[in-house]
Length: 452
Image (cartoon, rainbow, N blue to C red; front, side):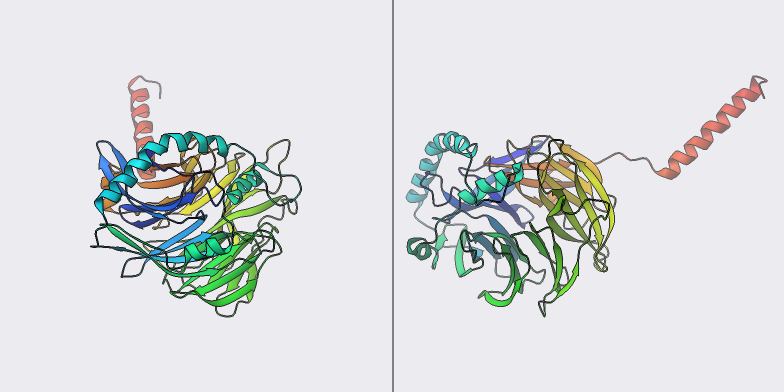
């Protein structure tokens, strides 16, 4: 069962962890005049009885655009946040602030949000169910329709929208959100859309990808362009930067997945999945590197495979673990026929988090790809973002001793937590010893009965 942490007044498309007990979510209604706000919001996690809850402690408006992709990391001064809005990426710094804003305005704003939450929630829920347009790509799959809904909420790129992004800043008694830079990161002629942004582990660069098929690398903090790679012939679904920061893996709707050298921008390898699978019947939807907490040098690569088109008889989806040095597949596991939508790796490299189009959340063991927990319909519609809480004492206290905990968001406005409770496992050696003892007991009994 998933724990409902909180709900927002707007559809949610991205989530990231700020620290042990704070998460950042983002989304919105876009530039369409729906009355649905566009925002990033910080929630603080707290233990409440047997459950964990989340309380909103700061909200930052991103009008007129909704945030569709999000990444964050600590830089010593606070938290750097890269937010994708339409074809742009805006870099923020979030810091603790001692500057108190007018309490009356805060109370009035809070009351206004509470009064309008019910009305907006109902109306927005009705809008979410509607079909939205998207540029033609042939017959649409359910996944394509979901992405069409996401795209429809993006804002326009007119002068008015541009002006609102320049120097945006919001303060409260707790946090200050400062805009550091904003650049165009996607240049698709019809519909620019930055689908993904990722920080390098050292925080020196970010990589972006989107509708025009380019992988672009930007230097922090001014977002100066370092690389512009014409990586794919179709839009990029996902990318990730290796822990060492010297490689980028990108996956696309053109059915290709490539490994790029960060220094030169040259292609190093292509990921070839399974030769037994018919050509172009599957594509990689998501990709993530994972690092062992005990052995930092041990790096794995994980991919999520979905059918390229909708079939009358649903095809299974898959998770694959790759050798991150040779870029060859090591293990593949079917996840069932429910189409996968999101992927995350825990900070200790032990667990994989998976979200589906039907709103399910699942947790897998990374090295064996064994499913250890599934919550059916944790969300009302497809899961748009996932992030694991850190594996430490704070998380254990918040989740009442869970092995790990997966935060999920969706366009249904909800933020949920999927905790993995400790599993009671019997050691193989104890099982063997117990079996031998049982045999001895049986033999002694049979001997006493004169049957041996």
